[in-house]
Length: 97
Image 1: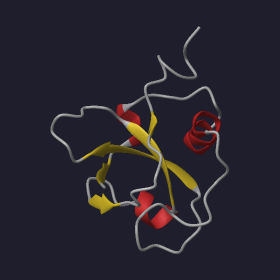
Image 2: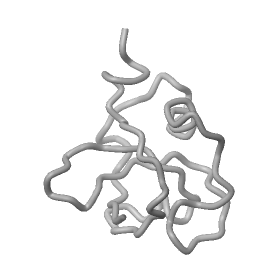
Image 3: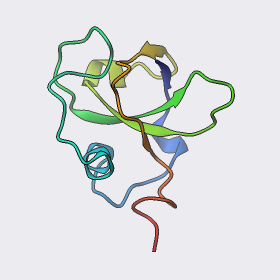
């Protein structure tokens, strides 16, 4: 699957402490061993905010990436098809009352 790494400021803040904690909480999984960029073998350290490359999907999501891939804002990344995209819309997750 292809995603575009987006600027973190475009989404706002998360009540989970970090976007990586947000991903862990809502995916129900532990941090993966490797960055979700398909060929990367670095450890994921950041919950990166991404959008899919599908024009029909305006959603913003969180996915674990290494610092190198997290820093590639605006670049299309091929991530693992097994990667679980967690909604970054806090109104339906950690910001919901």
